[in-house]
Length: 449
Image (tube, rainbow, N blue to C red; front, side):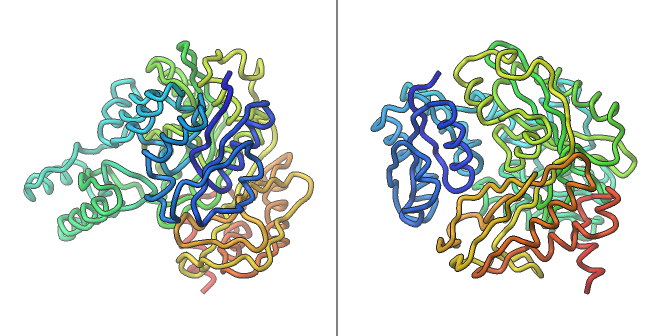
C-alpha cells in the first residue's frame, strides 16, 4: 500500500479523495493555488503546498510544478481526481519517472481512449455495439459531404479530442454541414489544441447510460452496474441516477456483463466508465470511455455500497479485485444526484461570487459532496459547481422526493444557482415517469415560460 499520496486536484474531488485516504490511514499531500488558500479541503490533508496563481494553467495544470511536489514530499502515489490532469497520458507517464504510481489506468489506456475515433475503432474491434461514424474528417469539402451522406442526416460533428460537450454541434442537412464542421474545428482548436473532428449519426432524444467498470493489474475486471446521465444542459450532465429507470434489468445487466468481459479482454486496469447512447428505439451504441473517476460516482457508491475511491487506490497499489470488493455486488435502492452550479437558472451562464450564506441540506439519505464553506468565493477560474447533492432511498419515487426536499432546504446567498431549474426538472411529469432523454431540460423549461 502507498505510504503517502499526493492529490493533484482541488475542491470537492480533492476532499472526496483526501477523506478516503484518511480512512485508509494513508498520509496525504494537498496542493492549492493562491485562490484556494484556506479552502476547506486543505484541512483534510496531512500536508499542504501552494503551487501557484489562480489560473489552472499556472497551478493545477502545470505538470512541472506537480512533479516537483511529488519529489519534494516523496509521495509514492498520485491521485488526479477528475478534470485537470486526470486523463493526461503524458502526465501519468511522467509520474512514473518519479518513482510514484499514478492512481488511474495505465498511460496506454488513457492515450488509447483519449482520441475519440481511435477509441471507436478499438471498441469496435472488441465487439462493442457501435453507431455509424467516420474517421477524422479530411479537408476536402466533397469528401466531408460524401461521408455524411453515407451516415444519413442529421449528423453530429464532434471533436476527436477533449470532452465536456465542447464543439459538439448538429447538422440537419447538407446546406449547413460544412459551416458546422468549420465552427466545430474552431471550438475544438481553442478548447483542446486539436482541431480534428469527425461525424457520428445523430439520434433524436437519446438516453445517456454509462457503465462503471473496475479492473486490476492481474487481468481481472468487473462492472458495478449502470448510471443514467441523460438529464443534461448543453451536453453536460446535471442530474444522474442509478439504476437507470425504465429499462428491463435483465437487458441492462446483460449489456453490463458484456462490457465487463470486453474490459477484461482488453486488460484494462483501474477505474473507468463506458458511456453508451440508447436510441429511442432502444438500441445501445458506444459513445466513449472515460479513464478516470467520474463526477457522478457517488450514486453508484450509494446503491452498491462500494467505495470506488478506495477500490481505485487499492487497484493502483496492486491488490486483486476479489480482495477489493464484496463477494457479491448488488444494487439496493435508488440514488439520484443533482449538480448544484453557481449559474443563472434561466440561461445556465456562470454566476461567480462570494457565498455569503452556505448551509447545505442534511438528513437521512442525503449526502453532500462539496469543496465550499460559508464565506468562500466561487471564482471564475474554475468549474462553477458548488456541490453535489445525492439522495438515496428504497425506490426512485422516494429518492426524488428526498432530493426535492433537500434542494428546497439548501440555503445559498451570493451567486445565483441552478437549483430552481433542477427543481423544475425533478417535479416535471416526464422525469417522474422516467421518460428522460438528453433534450429533456430545454423541453421542460420551455413549457414553464
